[in-house]
Image (cartoon, rainbow, N blue to C red; front, top):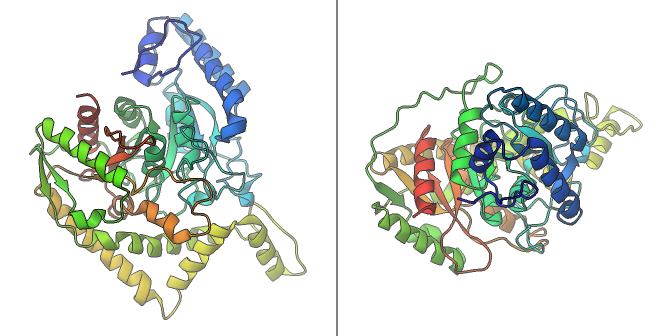
Length: 476
C-alpha cells in the first residue's frame, strides 16, 4: 500500500485508507488535500482533458468546513475529506450534467443522484465532473462532444470509455477516487487501460437514481480507485436500498462457502487477444495458483455470443431512453419551419454520430417484423447465459478472464471502425447481461509497457469475494 509522504503539501500516491488515518491523527487538513488536487488539475487538465468542469470554490469551502468540524472535536465520518470526481452523467444539484453531449450542454441538474448525496453525507468532497463518451456510448472517450481525454500513462493512447475521464482522473492523481457508470464494461475497460481498479457492482446493489440512462437494465454506477481496499471502503458506503430506485437490493447477502476453485474460460474464447494480454493473464493465473486456488476450465457456450446480444439489447433500450431528447421538453432546441423540422434539427445538432448510429440500430431491432428476429432472440440468449453462469458457480467460487483483449489503443485508431471499437467489450458485456458483479485489477505481468488487466466475475451479491481475491492477488 502506498505511503503518505511526510510533507502535508504533497499527497502523491495517497489512498483513502492513508488519508483517513492521516486526517484522524491531525497530521494534515482536508483543505490541504483539496488544494493539492486543484493544483494538479490546473497543471494537467489542459493537456489531458479529464475534467469538463472543476468546482474549485465549492470544494475548498467544503474542505474548510470539514477542517472546522475536526477542530470542534467531531468524529470523522466514513469518507471525511476524501476528494472525488464524478462522471458527467451523474447528477449533482445546481451543477451542469451534460452526459458528454451537446444535447445537454447547458442542462443544470435539479436534484442530486443518491450516490452523490450519500457520499457528501459521509464527508466526501466533489472536485468536478469528468469527461465521457456521449451518453456513455463508446470505449475510448473520443465520442465526447467536448473532445477526447488522453490516457495519462501514454498520452497518444485512449483512456478507455465511456468512463475514461473518471479513470484518467484517478490514474493521473487528479482525484482520490471517481464514480463511473458501467453498461457493458465502461468502468472495467478504462480501469484496465489506465492501470487502476474498476468495480461494477451487482445490478441493484448501488442506486441508479440520478444517473442519466443509457440502457436501464444494464446501467450500474460503480467505482474507480487506486487499490482494492479503497473500492471496498467506498462500496460499503454507497451500496444499499434506495426508495427512489425500485431495482435496488439490500446488503444482507449470505456469503457462500469458499471452495478455493476458480473458473477459467476455454482457450478458444481467448482467441484474438494480444499476445501481451495472454502472457500477463498466464502470470495472473500462476499467482492465483500460488495463493492456493485450483483452476478449472468451465463451459459457457453462450459467452461467445454475449457481445452480439448486448449490441442488440443495449441500442434498443438506448433508442427508448433517448426519445425524450426531442427539442420540446428540455435540453437543446433548434427551431425549424414546423414541429417535424424542430425535431430533426435538434437531434442532428445535439447528437453525435455514435449516438445516432445506436439509436437507429435500436429502433430497427424493435421495429415490426424484426423484433422477434433480433431483440427476441437476444433476450433468449441473455437468459441462457444467466443459467450457464449459475451452473458454473455451482462448481467454482468465481470466474477469471482478461478484462480487455488488448492494451490501450491509440487515439483515432478505431474511430472509423465501430465494430473494432465494440470488440473492446467482448469480455465485459456478459457481466452486464447477467447483472453479476465484476472487478478489473492491474495484471501482475510486465509483458508490455502499457498495463493489462485481470477481470474477476463473482455470483450476484458477492462483492466481498471480489475484494478478498483482489487483495490477495495484489499483495502476495
